[in-house]
Amino acid sequence: MSSLFKVFANIDRRVWHLLTFILVGYTLLHPIGLPLKVSPEVKKAYEVIENLKPGDVVLINFDIAAFGWDEIKGSCLSMIPHIFSKEGVKVIFLTVQDQGYIFIERTISQIGKPMPGYDKFPWYEIQGKKYLQDYINIGFIPGFDKAIAALAQDFRGVVGGKDWYGNSIEEWLDKNGIKSAKDIDLIVTFDCAGAQSYFVSYWYVPFKTKILNAMIGVSAPGSIVNYNAGMLEGIVISIRGAAEYQYLSKYYGMALVSMDAFSIIQFMLLIAILIGNIGYYGWERRKEKR
Amino acid sequence: MSSLIKSREFLLAIIIAVSFFIYFPYFVESPKPIVDIESWLVTTTVVIASFAVMVSLYTMTRREVMRITKRVKGWPYSLLMMILAWFMIVVGVSLGKDATPFRFCADAFVLPGDSTIYAILVFYLTSAAARSFKVRDLESLLLLLGAFFVLMQQAPLGEYLFPYFGPIGSWLVNNLAMAASRVFTISATLGGIVLAIRLLAGKEMAMIGLIARREKD
Image 1 (cartoon, rainbow over the protein chains, first blue to last red):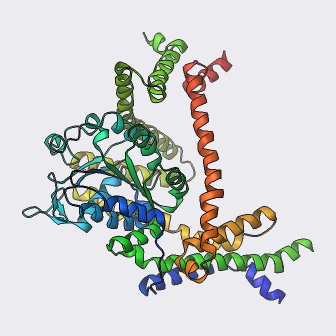
Image 2 (image 1 turned 180 degrees about the horizontal axis):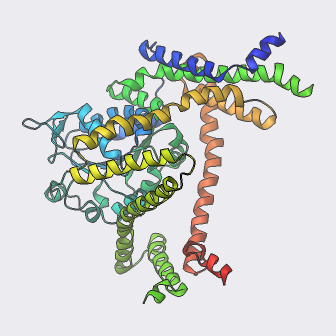
Image 3 (image 1 turned 30 degrees about the horizontal axis):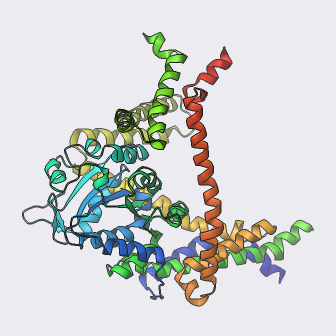
């Protein structure tokens, strides 16, 4: 028996790495389709987008860097098409991360298609909504929290007269009545670095602007606090939240598929903890006492 | 003129004035001229942030060149970093952010590399769970129980097999974890307000290096 405890206490970490690789790989290739319960915070996020009215202006912020893209893309690829499916809604894309514009374009290219007669950005249409008619992309604004604060203070001044590609957007902003931050009806921020807290400070507090937040797992604690305090209308947490949103909105994707791998890895974590503790009490601790 | 700019009183006056125009309108309903100055100051920070990127590029280049010339341990990595960083800058500035070589470097190296480093975490997480998460005392037992219930709540399989654990996990997240998190948030906010008062009173010298200078005096 003690030799088994010794084995448990001394399992090489490469064994765990290999097991993780095999289990994640297998469940991604052969999803089981475990049942999924939709959480109230994701349902609220869904309802806020579902209730958008014609003429509403949505500001979509990509606080996304490459490290978090795979975790958050499920939210992007389900929430953004849902926003674009609402009739008469106008959308402004923005990023406060230097890599963010790449992910805005990746998202648009996955959920949209080039407009007739065009073959490159920004001339894409999403769910029938055309660039410079229904949506614009103002691209990267440096400064992160300073950028979010500055946009709230002087939206038109910070955005300037041109989009990320150098096209004039003055007319589009005027036509849609966007003079200041007060004219934004909803902010949807996809976070890898917790941009939601600055939107709460500089947009929700002075203007009571509605904010939805999708974020990677490590940013979740801060978002949950603000959601429970009523400052965020809805939150979509990590791949789990994205899978729930994909299920609700019927924009199915990899987040739903990866839920099985997610479950398997979480159970493997528990088993790893259990085996580690059996090894510790059966062998290591006894050895320490001796 | 330069002695005036470098003087302690001048720097202090700038800090007090900026602090007043930023903090006062945030907490108190203020006249339009004050709000306009606040807006101008906040907007200016975006420009300063852009310049800060250039300053960081200069300091990074200076530091890495010194490491390379002195052949400090690991200097080939510094050389590689400098080559890649300056290649991206030269290509990006000369050909534009949408040029094929720039996009190729971003898509082929920067993004997969960044994603890979983050994805590797899952492997370390599982091996660390087995090797480090051991019940040595009451505190670690409580930590383990908390992790157990939250994991059960998060994983669809956990919810499916053990539906009674979900509400316990939710209660831990929405009550205990939130209470602890709010302590940090409120402490940081109170700290911010105290900092604002100290700045307005001209007592916060550390940020302009006045404490160090005073020690030398």
